[in-house]
Amino acid sequence: MKSQAKSIVGRTSLNLQETVSKFLKYLTNVESCSDLTIKAYHLDLSQAFPELKSQEKFTGWSEVELLSRARRALTHWGPLSPASRNRKASTLKSYFGYLYQE
Image (cartoon, rainbow, N blue to C red; front, side, top):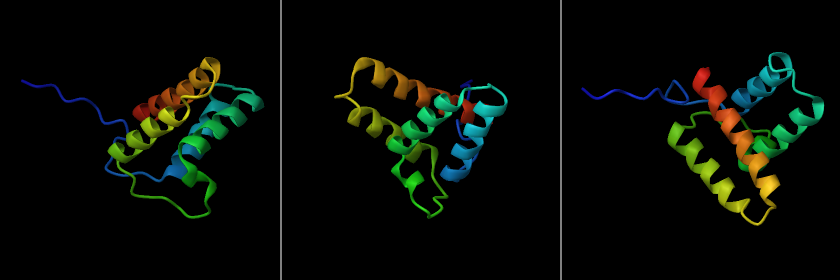
């Protein structure tokens, strides 16, 4: 019998702005991250998902689309220093971990 992996999103689609906003609030209220950390996470997520800068609401994103855009961002971050790449990758890992728990 095949075991089924849990979807990171837990549903068929999501609202990107809403989930990022909830993630940043979670970091502030539950994880007690500093303001600088929250600002860095927001910047990293805005660079990975440029749609966050738009006033439009982006709903209906599938898990596949979200992961595809994250992979694309990691590729674009290639020229950065190893420390910067690692921080940005850590941001994405934390965000996807949050979505998985959600």
